[in-house]
Structure formats: C-alpha cells, structure tokens
Image (cartoon, rainbow, N blue to C red):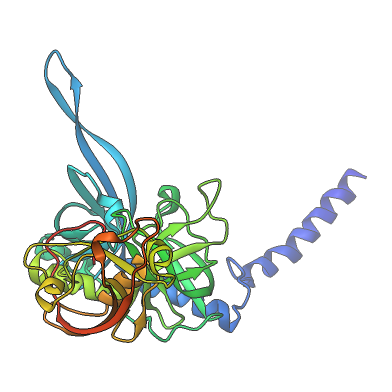
Length: 366
C-alpha cells in the first residue's frame, strides 16, 4: 500500500511540475476600460501629490527652557509648477512654526510659506530641492471648474489619516455651493462630491477624468468627522486666481466697496425689501467717494441681486481693484430715524458707479 501511495505521488509530481513551469508567476485579471483609466490617472498624477505636516514649537521643559517641535496636523498638497511651489489649504498650515513636505519616494524638505489666504482657504508653499531632486517636481495639469456638470466623474488623491497617496473616486454631486472658510468669509462656487474625503485629504487635488485639477479638497460634512459622502472642494478657477495673486504680491488682493454692513435680514425689517444695510463707511472708501451714505440699502451690484452679505462678497469676488461697478440702492429720506418706532420713512432709488479699491480691512464689510 505504501509503495502504491509513493508511486501515485511521484506520478502526480511528474504531471504537476511541467504544468507549473509553463504557468505565469502571478495571474492578473484583465482591467475594464474604466479601471484602466483610474489606474493610469493615479499613476500619472500621484507623483505630483505631497504629504504635508504642520509642527509648532512648544516648551518641553520649563526648568531647562527646552523647546521641541510638536506635530499638530497634517494634510495634502500638490505641485503647482516646476519652480517648487506647492498649493494646499490654509487650514493645513495654520499657526505652524514650520511645515514639512514629503514627496512620494520619501524625500522630505522644510517648506517656506510664500503666502496664505484664510478667506479662501488657500496657501502657497515653496520648496528648495537640490539639483539631483528637481525631477520630483511633477506639476499637475490645471483644468477649469466653470463648466463642471453634476454627474461627471471625479477623483481625489490625498493622505487620509496619514495613509499616503490614496485614491478615491466619485462624482460631482453639486456645483455652486457656498461653504464657510476658516477666516469667516464665504467661499463661493464650491464643488460638492461624494468621492470619499477624510481628515488628511485637505489640500489635495480633485481631478476630472482627464487628470486635470478642477478643485482642491477642503472640507467634509460629517457627524463623525469621517467621510459621509458629502465633501467639498474649492473650484480650481478660484484657486488659480488666489495663487496668482499670492505669487505676485505675497497675499490676495481683493476689491472692496469700503463698507461696514448690517446683519442679514435688517434691510427687510427696515424697508420691507431685501438688501444690505450700510452701517458705516471706511476712511477714503470707494463707496463713500461715490456718494454712498450710512443707512443706504444695497439692492444690486452689476445686476446681481443683493439679499445677504454673502451676495455682496460673491459679487465683489468677480472683480479686481480698479474695476467700476454699477450699484443700485435704496436711500431713506430720514436715515437718522431708521429703526425707530412709529416713524414713516420713504426710500428712493439711487444708482451709482463705484470704482473699487483694494480691501484694507477684513471683517463684516464689502
């Protein structure tokens, strides 16, 4: 019986060995066209995505006055050009003592902050690589966000929870959203997506199916803090405009009217019509020089109806300092009695051409 078993095993080995010799070392399933696109997109663009860590100096030993660098956050970023500029979210590098950028093959370098804008959540970093590492600068292709359509496929590359260079896929779930920046100013035209975005994805690119950057991932809505299918990206057109200003001036130049504005809903209560109430004027403001007065109610800027403070921001974000806008407003005949009980006030229509100036102060203003 033993000899039969041995003979049978020898026979099986004689059959199996030749078969194994002609089989490939590892079998792969064929990729579908869609899978091949995703794989190629990831391979082509991942080298241009970086991992960013934010560290601050803290007093480790008060008796010896020892200071140590403590990591306080991390996120993603992407190579903007071959000059070493990296783009990320402002909140990724906020309050940092220094910032470290890590490339896909492991090279880490301390980055300099060129400029940052908390009101659009955009920051630009600069890395200085030695000559033998310049090839790590693989700028991503820039796309346009203006013509995005709900339903088109998008891809997010980032470093969620520190897991470097992760790809997620989804669709554009909505366009034209308004989200709040860390600086308190609304970001207009945000892209809503169901591509999984988690902590650590912030600052990473949102790509279309051609591998072009059409947004920068910035925030999620989730009760748990993890992805719940509702993420938002700053549109690439906004990012490009803010980056261009930072690279040219070191900060974002904004056009403003030079107004202090009343709270939303105040115009409706005072006049029965929506608008933005002028609570005050800044010194040498564009609006003041054009004839705007405290108590006036802004109703339109270049044909855009004004119902909230955000509407004013949205209109001004489309302009640069030096542009002239046509403003239609309501003017009370007795501004000093606005809001007083038992007072009859008549509002007259006024139209003004206002040449916008650069914003000098931030706050509840236009």
